[in-house]
Image 1 (cartoon, one colour):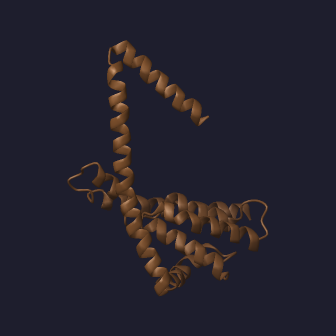
Image 2 (tube, one colour; image 1 turned 180 degrees about the vertical axis):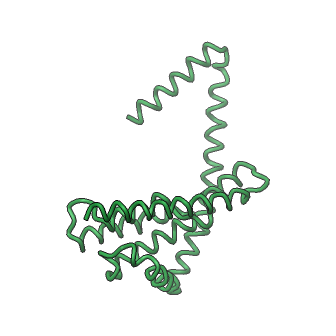
Image 3 (cartoon, helix red, strand yellow; image 1 turned 90 degrees about the vertical axis):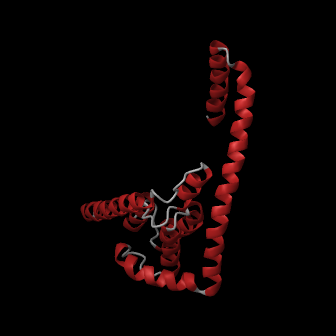
Length: 191
């Protein structure tokens, strides 16, 4: 399917270039786009390397475990079926911590591990309340440091890449509270 989308985009671009007399600019635009993609990739990679390095330092120093225990006390009531399972709560806490720091890609392995563990300990064939709550928290994505957005704004030449931080924090807090409340209400209806 993706192959068809890209093929159609290239063909349509060539047709529009032919119709508007700008077909000769198509190769230049393609090369400029490729150069911008590489530049953006390097910028994003730098931001991710920084935060992944900090996460690894936290892991090696034991800070991640302490953070997981602290977050576990806060998040435990939201996950009644797995709150006593150290492995599941550790993965949940690390996933949420990485998402909170704006590192969605770094959070993915922890999220997959948490879901696998919840499925195993709850012997679930379909989504459980804990899995749904975890999905809601990931979707609403409480964000305190929008790392990716700041890196993107920096790469695009923003004079103040941090100016969106407060609105993003407010928005993510509201979405998280509404998501948790909705999941709790729907969870009560399911039981």
